[in-house]
Image 1 (cartoon, rainbow, N blue to C red):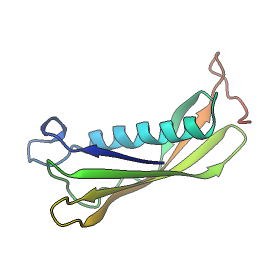
Image 2: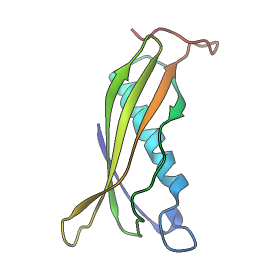
Image 3: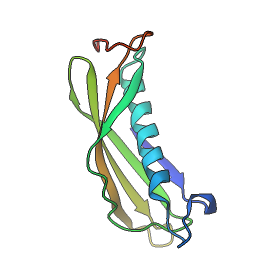
Image 4: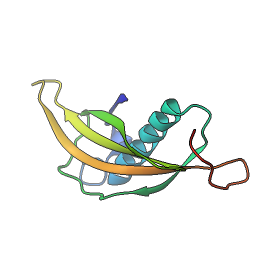
Length: 117
């Protein structure tokens, strides 16, 4: 799944760069949407995110492209790889700024793990 967002002033830290927490929120949300679309009817919650390492800072006005794809499926969990790129609309250049693997578990209405069908 591919998604885009624009970095706006409310996403910046005191140094004028994108807050890492904003990026992590977007990554979690977009991966959850991808998992939910790939597995309709499943109630997923995040149980883990691999390595959190920001490759470079991002400034206001950058367009971020998120690419989320399923990489592994277990009995009750599913893992997605999420790659994030910053686009420079003036030059057309795209640069990788972040990537991680995020894992979700399927829960039933009582909060117990449930097999992915």
